Length: 260
Image: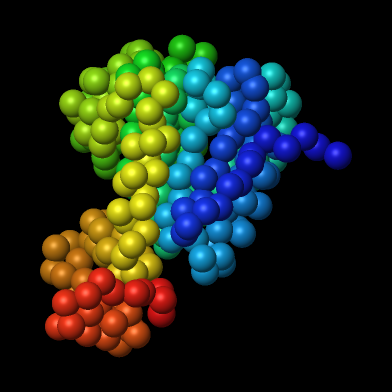
Protein backbone atom coordinates (compact mmCIF):
# COMPACT_ATOMS: atom_id res chain seq x y z
CA UNK A 1 0.00 0.00 0.00
CA UNK A 2 1.37 3.40 -0.99
CA UNK A 3 2.15 5.90 1.76
CA UNK A 4 -0.31 8.67 2.46
CA UNK A 5 1.33 11.84 1.10
CA UNK A 6 -1.71 14.12 0.75
CA UNK A 7 -3.88 14.73 3.80
CA UNK A 8 -7.31 16.34 3.99
CA UNK A 9 -8.92 18.10 6.97
CA UNK A 10 -12.42 19.62 6.78
CA UNK A 11 -13.98 22.03 9.25
CA UNK A 12 -16.76 24.64 9.06
CA UNK A 13 -16.92 24.80 5.28
CA UNK A 14 -13.14 24.98 4.86
CA UNK A 15 -11.02 22.10 3.56
CA UNK A 16 -7.27 22.12 4.16
CA UNK A 17 -5.11 19.94 1.93
CA UNK A 18 -1.60 19.15 3.20
CA UNK A 19 1.13 17.80 0.95
CA UNK A 20 3.13 15.60 3.34
CA UNK A 21 5.99 14.07 1.39
CA UNK A 22 9.06 14.73 3.55
CA UNK A 23 11.57 16.16 3.61
CA UNK A 24 10.70 18.67 0.87
CA UNK A 25 7.18 17.68 -0.24
CA UNK A 26 8.40 17.01 -3.79
CA UNK A 27 5.93 16.29 -6.58
CA UNK A 28 6.07 12.53 -7.04
CA UNK A 29 3.70 10.36 -9.05
CA UNK A 30 2.14 9.32 -5.75
CA UNK A 31 1.50 12.97 -4.78
CA UNK A 32 -0.15 13.61 -8.16
CA UNK A 33 -2.44 10.59 -7.80
CA UNK A 34 -3.50 11.54 -4.29
CA UNK A 35 -4.05 15.19 -5.19
CA UNK A 36 -6.34 14.01 -7.97
CA UNK A 37 -8.30 11.81 -5.57
CA UNK A 38 -8.63 14.52 -2.90
CA UNK A 39 -9.76 17.23 -5.32
CA UNK A 40 -12.20 14.83 -6.97
CA UNK A 41 -13.76 14.42 -3.54
CA UNK A 42 -13.81 18.17 -2.92
CA UNK A 43 -15.52 18.87 -6.24
CA UNK A 44 -18.69 17.17 -5.05
CA UNK A 45 -18.55 17.89 -1.31
CA UNK A 46 -21.44 20.32 -0.81
CA UNK A 47 -20.23 21.28 2.68
CA UNK A 48 -16.85 22.61 1.48
CA UNK A 49 -16.87 26.22 0.27
CA UNK A 50 -13.16 27.17 0.36
CA UNK A 51 -10.02 25.05 -0.05
CA UNK A 52 -6.60 25.80 1.47
CA UNK A 53 -3.56 24.03 -0.03
CA UNK A 54 -0.20 23.93 1.75
CA UNK A 55 2.85 21.81 2.51
CA UNK A 56 3.40 19.99 5.78
CA UNK A 57 6.14 21.40 8.00
CA UNK A 58 7.83 24.77 7.53
CA UNK A 59 10.62 23.96 5.08
CA UNK A 60 8.80 23.63 1.79
CA UNK A 61 5.42 24.14 0.19
CA UNK A 62 6.77 21.93 -2.58
CA UNK A 63 10.38 21.98 -3.70
CA UNK A 64 9.69 20.90 -7.27
CA UNK A 65 9.36 17.54 -8.96
CA UNK A 66 10.93 14.31 -7.76
CA UNK A 67 14.12 14.38 -9.87
CA UNK A 68 14.66 10.68 -9.16
CA UNK A 69 11.68 9.94 -11.41
CA UNK A 70 13.16 11.85 -14.38
CA UNK A 71 15.34 9.02 -15.80
CA UNK A 72 12.21 6.91 -16.22
CA UNK A 73 10.51 9.75 -18.12
CA UNK A 74 13.52 10.15 -20.41
CA UNK A 75 13.10 6.56 -21.58
CA UNK A 76 9.30 6.58 -21.67
CA UNK A 77 7.99 6.47 -25.27
CA UNK A 78 4.66 7.76 -23.96
CA UNK A 79 6.14 10.60 -21.93
CA UNK A 80 3.66 13.17 -23.21
CA UNK A 81 0.82 11.13 -21.74
CA UNK A 82 2.48 11.31 -18.31
CA UNK A 83 2.99 15.05 -18.69
CA UNK A 84 -0.63 15.56 -19.67
CA UNK A 85 -1.75 13.45 -16.69
CA UNK A 86 0.00 15.96 -14.42
CA UNK A 87 -1.59 18.82 -16.34
CA UNK A 88 -4.99 17.21 -15.84
CA UNK A 89 -4.59 17.30 -12.05
CA UNK A 90 -3.29 20.89 -12.08
CA UNK A 91 -6.22 21.89 -14.30
CA UNK A 92 -8.57 20.09 -11.93
CA UNK A 93 -7.36 22.33 -9.09
CA UNK A 94 -7.30 25.46 -11.26
CA UNK A 95 -10.83 24.88 -12.58
CA UNK A 96 -12.35 23.84 -9.23
CA UNK A 97 -15.56 25.87 -8.85
CA UNK A 98 -14.61 26.83 -5.29
CA UNK A 99 -12.14 29.50 -4.11
CA UNK A 100 -8.66 28.14 -3.40
CA UNK A 101 -5.87 29.58 -1.25
CA UNK A 102 -2.25 28.39 -1.37
CA UNK A 103 -0.09 28.88 1.73
CA UNK A 104 3.56 28.97 0.68
CA UNK A 105 5.48 27.97 3.79
CA UNK A 106 8.99 27.54 2.47
CA UNK A 107 10.62 26.46 -0.78
CA UNK A 108 8.18 26.78 -3.68
CA UNK A 109 10.14 25.68 -6.71
CA UNK A 110 9.35 24.22 -10.13
CA UNK A 111 6.25 22.07 -9.97
CA UNK A 112 5.53 23.58 -6.56
CA UNK A 113 5.45 27.08 -7.99
CA UNK A 114 3.27 25.82 -10.83
CA UNK A 115 0.95 24.16 -8.32
CA UNK A 116 0.66 27.42 -6.37
CA UNK A 117 -0.25 29.19 -9.62
CA UNK A 118 -3.34 26.99 -9.97
CA UNK A 119 -4.81 28.54 -6.81
CA UNK A 120 -6.88 31.73 -6.75
CA UNK A 121 -5.00 33.40 -3.89
CA UNK A 122 -1.44 32.91 -2.61
CA UNK A 123 -0.13 33.72 0.87
CA UNK A 124 3.63 33.47 1.42
CA UNK A 125 5.47 33.22 4.70
CA UNK A 126 8.42 35.58 4.80
CA UNK A 127 11.07 32.83 4.59
CA UNK A 128 9.63 31.43 1.37
CA UNK A 129 11.57 31.35 -1.87
CA UNK A 130 9.57 31.05 -5.09
CA UNK A 131 10.91 30.18 -8.49
CA UNK A 132 11.05 28.08 -11.64
CA UNK A 133 14.63 26.73 -11.81
CA UNK A 134 14.05 24.13 -14.54
CA UNK A 135 16.35 25.92 -17.03
CA UNK A 136 19.30 25.03 -14.78
CA UNK A 137 18.67 21.35 -15.60
CA UNK A 138 18.36 22.04 -19.32
CA UNK A 139 14.58 21.91 -19.03
CA UNK A 140 11.79 24.45 -18.85
CA UNK A 141 8.61 24.62 -16.74
CA UNK A 142 6.38 21.82 -17.96
CA UNK A 143 3.40 21.90 -15.60
CA UNK A 144 1.77 25.08 -16.80
CA UNK A 145 4.40 27.58 -15.68
CA UNK A 146 4.97 29.06 -19.13
CA UNK A 147 1.24 29.71 -19.41
CA UNK A 148 0.02 30.66 -15.93
CA UNK A 149 2.93 32.80 -14.73
CA UNK A 150 2.86 35.34 -17.63
CA UNK A 151 -0.90 35.66 -17.23
CA UNK A 152 -0.39 36.53 -13.58
CA UNK A 153 2.67 38.80 -13.49
CA UNK A 154 3.18 39.78 -17.13
CA UNK A 155 5.28 38.34 -19.92
CA UNK A 156 8.55 40.19 -19.29
CA UNK A 157 8.82 39.42 -15.58
CA UNK A 158 7.78 35.82 -16.15
CA UNK A 159 10.38 35.33 -18.86
CA UNK A 160 13.12 36.77 -16.64
CA UNK A 161 12.23 34.33 -13.86
CA UNK A 162 12.20 31.37 -16.26
CA UNK A 163 15.26 32.43 -18.31
CA UNK A 164 17.46 32.83 -15.21
CA UNK A 165 15.91 30.15 -13.04
CA UNK A 166 16.55 32.37 -10.03
CA UNK A 167 13.97 32.46 -7.22
CA UNK A 168 12.36 35.55 -5.75
CA UNK A 169 11.78 36.27 -2.09
CA UNK A 170 8.30 36.46 -0.59
CA UNK A 171 8.58 40.25 -0.44
CA UNK A 172 9.58 40.50 -4.10
CA UNK A 173 6.81 38.05 -5.03
CA UNK A 174 4.24 40.32 -3.42
CA UNK A 175 5.73 43.34 -5.19
CA UNK A 176 5.30 41.76 -8.65
CA UNK A 177 1.84 40.36 -7.92
CA UNK A 178 2.87 36.72 -7.61
CA UNK A 179 1.46 36.48 -4.08
CA UNK A 180 -1.35 38.40 -2.39
CA UNK A 181 0.04 38.60 1.14
CA UNK A 182 3.32 38.08 3.01
CA UNK A 183 3.18 37.06 6.66
CA UNK A 184 5.69 36.10 9.33
CA UNK A 185 7.05 32.56 9.39
CA UNK A 186 4.52 30.22 10.96
CA UNK A 187 1.55 32.55 10.43
CA UNK A 188 0.50 31.50 6.93
CA UNK A 189 -2.26 29.13 7.99
CA UNK A 190 -3.69 31.65 10.45
CA UNK A 191 -3.91 34.25 7.68
CA UNK A 192 -5.38 31.73 5.24
CA UNK A 193 -8.01 30.52 7.70
CA UNK A 194 -9.02 34.10 8.55
CA UNK A 195 -9.43 34.86 4.85
CA UNK A 196 -11.18 31.55 4.16
CA UNK A 197 -13.70 32.18 6.96
CA UNK A 198 -14.57 35.57 5.45
CA UNK A 199 -15.08 33.98 2.04
CA UNK A 200 -16.98 30.94 3.34
CA UNK A 201 -19.67 33.20 4.84
CA UNK A 202 -20.85 33.95 1.31
CA UNK A 203 -22.86 31.83 -1.10
CA UNK A 204 -20.98 29.33 -3.23
CA UNK A 205 -23.49 30.19 -5.96
CA UNK A 206 -22.02 33.67 -6.22
CA UNK A 207 -18.41 32.72 -5.42
CA UNK A 208 -18.27 30.09 -8.15
CA UNK A 209 -19.68 32.51 -10.72
CA UNK A 210 -17.19 35.22 -9.75
CA UNK A 211 -14.41 32.71 -10.36
CA UNK A 212 -15.89 31.56 -13.67
CA UNK A 213 -16.45 35.12 -14.90
CA UNK A 214 -12.89 36.17 -14.10
CA UNK A 215 -11.13 33.01 -15.28
CA UNK A 216 -13.07 32.46 -18.49
CA UNK A 217 -13.89 36.08 -19.24
CA UNK A 218 -10.24 37.06 -18.91
CA UNK A 219 -9.42 34.86 -21.89
CA UNK A 220 -12.03 36.56 -24.08
CA UNK A 221 -12.40 39.90 -25.82
CA UNK A 222 -14.01 42.41 -23.44
CA UNK A 223 -17.37 42.28 -25.21
CA UNK A 224 -17.45 38.46 -24.94
CA UNK A 225 -16.44 38.70 -21.29
CA UNK A 226 -19.28 41.11 -20.61
CA UNK A 227 -21.68 38.72 -22.34
CA UNK A 228 -20.47 35.89 -20.11
CA UNK A 229 -20.85 38.05 -17.02
CA UNK A 230 -24.43 38.94 -17.99
CA UNK A 231 -25.32 35.27 -18.45
CA UNK A 232 -23.84 34.32 -15.09
CA UNK A 233 -25.55 37.30 -13.43
CA UNK A 234 -28.89 36.10 -14.78
CA UNK A 235 -28.15 32.60 -13.47
CA UNK A 236 -27.30 33.75 -9.96
CA UNK A 237 -30.53 35.78 -9.78
CA UNK A 238 -32.43 32.51 -10.14
CA UNK A 239 -30.84 30.94 -7.04
CA UNK A 240 -32.41 30.51 -3.62
CA UNK A 241 -29.42 32.22 -2.02
CA UNK A 242 -30.18 35.50 -3.82
CA UNK A 243 -33.67 35.48 -2.37
CA UNK A 244 -32.19 34.83 1.06
CA UNK A 245 -29.55 37.55 0.67
CA UNK A 246 -32.04 40.19 -0.45
CA UNK A 247 -34.54 39.23 2.27
CA UNK A 248 -31.84 39.37 4.93
CA UNK A 249 -30.77 42.83 3.77
CA UNK A 250 -34.35 44.15 3.88
CA UNK A 251 -34.97 42.54 7.26
CA UNK A 252 -31.61 43.83 8.62
CA UNK A 253 -30.25 40.42 9.59
CA UNK A 254 -27.36 38.20 8.54
CA UNK A 255 -28.17 35.91 5.61
CA UNK A 256 -28.14 32.15 6.05
CA UNK A 257 -26.95 30.83 2.72
CA UNK A 258 -27.64 27.21 1.73
CA UNK A 259 -25.46 27.38 -1.42
CA UNK A 260 -28.46 26.66 -3.65
